[in-house]
Image 1 (cartoon, one colour):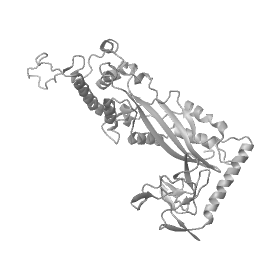
Image 2 (tube, helix red, strand yellow):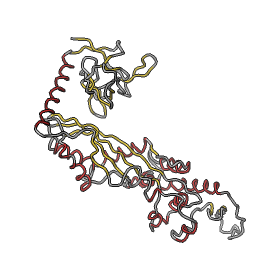
Image 3 (cartoon, helix red, strand yellow):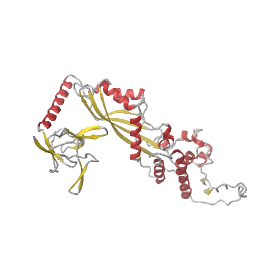
Length: 406
């Protein structure tokens, strides 16, 4: 038996790289720095080659991650998946373990066998699909600032009134006359009648502030419960800042991941991806053949529905008003490990939506009845305001496993 050392993030590789991260919930303070203990599969850089690689091989003891068991990394048993196949230089010499020193050699021999199989596959004309691979992209493009719902400040007062019938925009201020709208008295016998109160003038900036406050208040009709209820308020705030820069939030990424994982319908894009991998992977050569890459695009286009927030609960938790449908989607197969009849893969979803309204939105006979959309449209499209719409970014990576023919 030999003595090995557990590995921690920031430990170096023999080729000049370093381990980027480990278990976020298993940390030690070492020299005043919080260090994460490293597992098989954690990310690592190479000192000679660009990109991210992973820790291969573990020392035997396991750690549960999302219901899956992963082995802890160790100095005797682990190496980098980079082209150098570098070993690791432990920096914490007080955390040791007893190890069969042959375990690391076994992992190396296994990797060498895979390389030989890959050469054999290429000699037979079987080309592996390079990983990572963009396996799906919508026709609508990313970063599309020329889309109709990304216009702003392009309409005059006359156009708002004649083309769109927007004469009643706000319940608090008349943006055309820049005067406050007096509240109607609750008591029918109060003596109030139209014209009994003087109209109070406000500035253009003040009118916009009042309209944004009203925008936020009305949004609560569609967003009043759950962890995502404040997202719409943040997005309205972002619009009011008028930078036009993309918006992202860990909560949106979380909502997207939940939608993807909870979609167990026959039209689930993730289930279709699993089905394609299981059907066309080649276990003998540990690859997914390049000749079948097109299967992803065709199958997702024809037989699946891309992730979006359209469930009944989304109408009141803030997701429908904040996102609802999406503009562009890219799906990337970030990693794929084929081992005999089994596989493990990481699938990344990058989705964009536009927080903006086009003509059709406010001309819709249903949407135009809601004051919130009339406010939104006027703030964005009227040339007296011209608040910039923006792109909403969502990203998430999901890990899947399966077997051939499933």
